[in-house]
Length: 67
Image 1 (tube, one colour):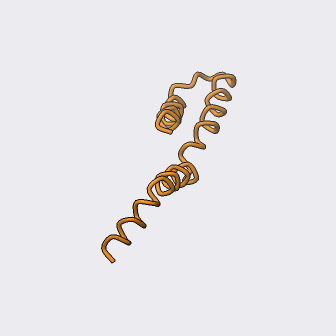
Image 2 (tube, helix red, strand yellow; image 1 turned 90 degrees about the horizontal axis):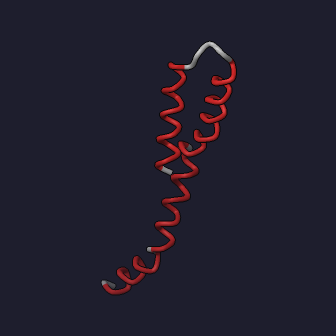
């Protein structure tokens, strides 16, 4: 995830150095679109949901202990 966000940022910054040909512009555009997926909330939601899924049993154990 961190690699994708960094690559997206570098590709966005590289637009300022694009020469006046269309090929590099298209390559940067495709790179930006592909790695822009890593900046959406869906990726973060999946990571956080996995974290809660692994720690779910611990929450029940703590609740039952202090009951």
